[in-house]
Length: 350
Image 1 (cartoon, rainbow, N blue to C red):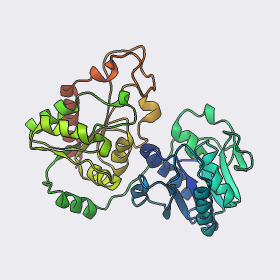
Image 2 (cartoon, rainbow, N blue to C red):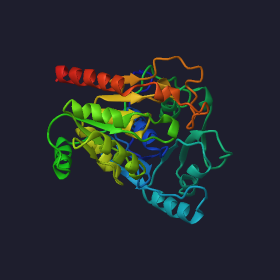
Image 3 (cartoon, rainbow, N blue to C red):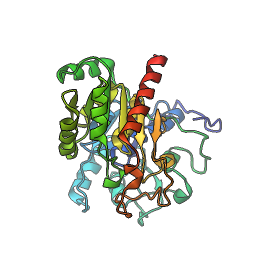
């Protein structure tokens, strides 16, 4: 970030809490907010509210002191659980909280905890819960602009660029992960075929796995339990060089992405993880806009259909045209060819 109007204040040591969005990709992007805060206040401890799913990410985020677990149920207020969480927040003596989501529910525990400065955008009639109002969220173009703006002084202009999210994975952890899974030390392609919303899932991962295997590359299929059946289909198509490495623990996905030579993903949380750990990452986009949703870190390749579609981008999780051309018109051969160029580039730069 390059904003000379904001001077660091190393004398301030009061702890700050961030209430981020809890989708994996959004949570990763929240590390940019941490970096902005640390530029303003290098000695203020920064904690993140987290769910059990996202908690492993906190261990790899520079600038984060700790994660505060808050597995609040969806669809109901759960006042008793909110009060319990508020007690934990009160014990940490936070003086500032940035509440990223605009929901009423996300601001309850910080308000019950009596955190003096509760910063958030206007939304869902949160009068009394948020006491440092910010306006103009809808005018901000990207998700990261909406979130990171809360870390700036009220009214400050957005910088030309934000600090990129970072996930720092120690090399020895990645090596131990490979050994524990019986994986050889050569080049490997990580495939992340899952996403929230069926329309964002590329069609030909199984065929791509087969082509990679034929070229002598190891292939890892990465994802959560929801991708298990799809992973088994990909393994069946690709043969013995293709491994199903899906699992219940997100840490497995983080270490896999850090260990891979190249990652290929839909618009998903694992795409953001791969980019943030520094692995050359290819993002396959159909219904969503790379400008709005690609990682700030940059992608080794942004893959989209070569045909011009009037409905693209629709930003919908379900294809309303019933043909899914934005994904079906991207061939496995094209993706494999781009990946080989990315690998050659990475080897040339090494």
